[in-house]
Length: 334
Image (cartoon, rainbow, N blue to C red):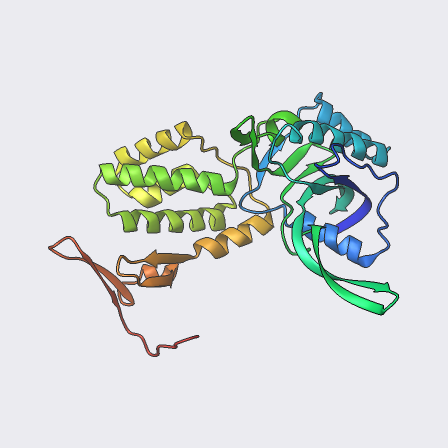
């Protein structure tokens, strides 16, 4: 996706100082490394862990987002202030930098909030005294992650329709680890992420499979294949399509599966962003098998389903034999 940054601000969240340090000036977007850093971070927010939703029109957060188009720096400070009021209640939430950016993508206006935690690292310091220069090794405790890494938490909001993408984390609050961003900051219940939905599907499929005496390795393989096909064909995950793929002609198992996933929190999603589809198709296009004897295999789906290339045999004693066939060459990589 092509992103054009219009405005951006950096606000410092030093937990030891007790309150945010708000910038009174915008970031200089004429600097290429600043633009590149922010654009990469924004792009990385679209992933299998991303939750989606729509802000309520009359919510306080929605009003702040819309005000950012006309009074960016003040709005950015109020957004960070609102976020920090919830964040600061956690006894373990770390220090970080908070970026707020106004940008265009395909001529549409968006606001991004990015929270990037500090990391400890080592660097050099050149000092001098009456005897001359001295190079020292020092610990730097406020380093940011690189541009290719995801922000620790983040939000993008489409200013026109208030749809959003969200990455959030759980932190301890009075000893209880819980989410705070969706519940307190934006006060909106997002649709579960693709990763959360897949976890529910996998767990329920295993339970239903056990009930109907389906081999576990077959169930997991079918789930991965169903996820891959659903995303590739429909651009989104669909529980009904997964049920048909995994439990085939067993209507009772299909219905039980569909009811159970909804009870466990599964929600059908809208069409996934292109970036998420590409990640998902790549991840689920291969079967990763770990055998009890320590052997690990990575098998492309088209190979996994071809009995002329790989075969799973259930032995009378309850063990499973795996036969790999028609291999022209074995390459041993260090």
